[in-house]
Length: 237
Image 1: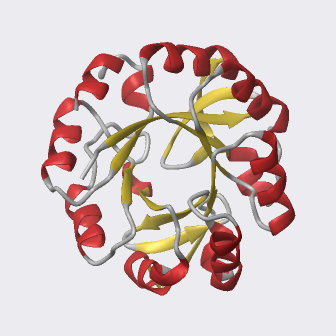
Image 2: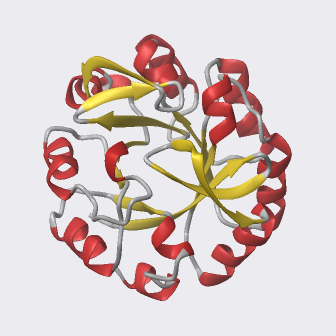
């Protein structure tokens, strides 16, 4: 199985930020989205992973100008999540040049919508499953329910999604190491490719994920921004 590193560009108030465990009050600002996208492009990353954080909380796109600036600054395909809750928004972003949209809260709360979107746009819809202690969190991670990440993944296994992005919220932005075991266990139950997210601290995390042979990629945030992992090291994995 190929293994793809996805550098993350999280957007808040039109700027690139990194959060700790999804807490908007703990945001470190890293600057201009277009500049960051161009840098990741020049480094050779095959994809960019973009999240509209404000949109995730608002339930609708909130950083559209920044996303368009990213699209203009890169030749790489971009996957985008955050605030995508209806078919009109899916269609609008795909028409704007987004290569793959990510359905998170919408998929958890309305699996039929997720299936409809996957059928309408084959290969262009991913499912974001964000978990806290194994249970799915929605609305920008502000709400945690009783549905487990595995249950939701199995429920959507027949949707035809391009990928499932599994985020361990408690590890996200903390540089404490990725949850290899939970992600591998999920991937082992699914035919849909699974991408890991949350907690990457260095090259060892990437090597451990790839060594499972079942995980299709990893999203890397703070480790890249803080220099704990170089683009060359990430791409070397």
